Length: 290
Image (cartoon, rainbow, N blue to C red; front, side, top):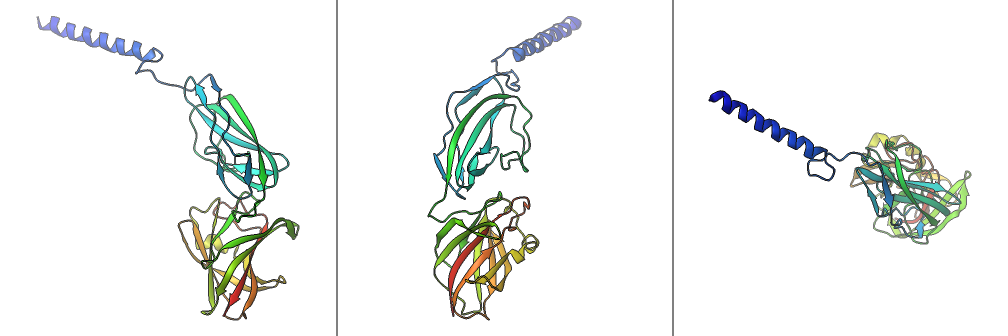
């Protein structure tokens, strides 16, 4: 009798296991394991502004897509008469030179791999191993703006976010040059007091500023300084602090008289990602009071 009961239990368990295996192999069932897509399509269009201003990041929205399994959108940009970079996985477009660029959203089989980067096929991109299922493109105009924003042309852009509480306004973008590179001219409105002998500024960058330390700054400290309006360097910049993506820098101006000066950032300024530099000069003219 016991042998019969044991045999019956084994038979029931075997039948249940067999049924679960059949259900798992049936498409559309709850137990089915979803693999990489073999087919997919894009039915919508890329949602992006027709014009993106130099240095002002824009997050583009992917078109509507469908696939029969795991798939995702990868972003890339081809520079035409203008220049821009785009983050491969989140679609953040940053323009660096005026003109037009072509943005492409590619539906790729499989899941996203780690890494982001410029989306232009250079550095920082971890390739997604998958098949291209569909693409959508959009031509975007990169333009200069009279409003102050991120500035830079080498894969990284800089924003002076703290200037003793004063506002920054653009004087001229893209038409001046220094040492054969673009010179961005800006002006800090309102006077900066140097009565204590030290003045401070704060800046952030669009790339490689997530773990910024003093030794990183030291690699290009000579690229940042206080200059006269005639171009003579009159004060060096010292590292102050880093918090909330803001690098605080200080300048000893005790030997300077009151007047107009320039805070200048050179082309080699970068963050932790040393492959992405400003590749231009950025000036901020200010008035020093004592």
